[in-house]
Length: 209
Image (cartoon, rainbow, N blue to C red; front, side, top):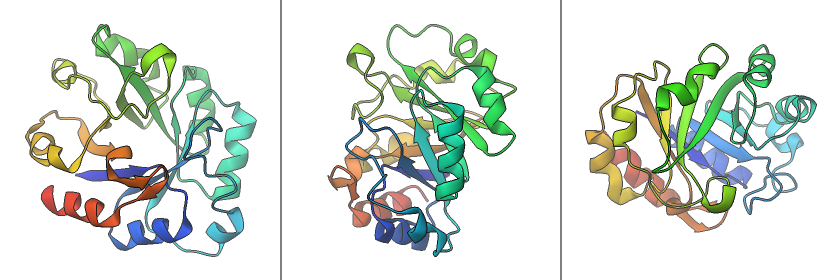
């Protein structure tokens, strides 16, 4: 199972995740986030370091030119689009980089398959997160009802996100869907916003074996 640790703000922690053989690390390029990475990790630092971990740039309703600039500056392997981005933008970006399209889920979400249908041909992965209040993006620390996904075909590799903690390891292992590829973790593994507790991350990795 793949693990994506999102909200990294320190080069040292990116190196530690790489050393733990974590699969994906999320760097947030959304200025409203307390985990905004610009000014905390420089492009020069990343250029001089070799990683096996896939670097994921997280964007919210950013323009194509801005995203591509960050892909080049930070050597991003994947972009995660966490806003109301169009299939057209996903298709544009997919020529240069892998694309994760994130969808916010709550009790009012209808058909998951209808929700993702327009993105089927233009993304590499999906990510399902808990919808925030009043249109807030991610970071809720809460879980949506995963049963909503079990009823859907989806037919693309996807990440589960939203309030997943170490105590959820058994629940994660019990979750079955043919396209389920991994989890996205963030706030439940932090000492403070943007600073991860690596001991907890390691415990989760071991618990998921």
